[in-house]
Amino acid sequence: LAAHGHWLGGDVDFHEADSWMLVGTNPLVSKAIGIPGQNPSQSLRAAVERGMKLIVIDPRRSQTAARAAIHLQPRPGEDVTILAG
Image 1 (cartoon, rainbow, N blue to C red):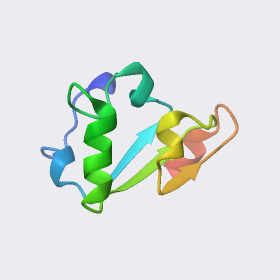
Image 2 (tube, helix red, strand yellow; image 1 turned 90 degrees about the vertical axis):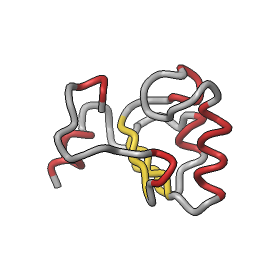
Image 3 (cartoon, helix red, strand yellow; image 1 turned 180 degrees about the vertical axis):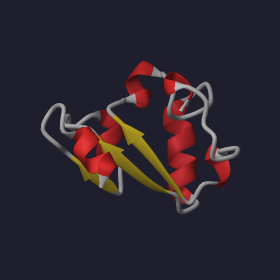
Image 4 (cartoon, one colour; image 1 turned 135 degrees about the horizontal axis):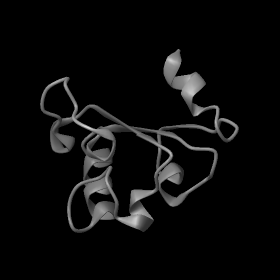
C-alpha cells in the first residue's frame, strides 16, 4: 500500500485483518512493506494463528508464499490480469 501511493479505502490494520494480500513481494526475507513489525515472520505467524488468511500473488514460491492459504502463481507480468478480475 505505502509503496504505491496512498490507500483511500480507510485505515488498514494488519493485526485485526481477516485476510491479507501481497502481490509480488517477499517481506519475510526483504522486511519490506507488507507485514508490519520488526520481525515479519513472528507477526505473520501470530496473525495466521488467530485465523487470518494470507493470499500471495507471485510467480515465485517464496518464503512468504509458502505460508499462504492461497498462492496464485501467474506468469511474470500477468498479475495485473488477476487483479483486474
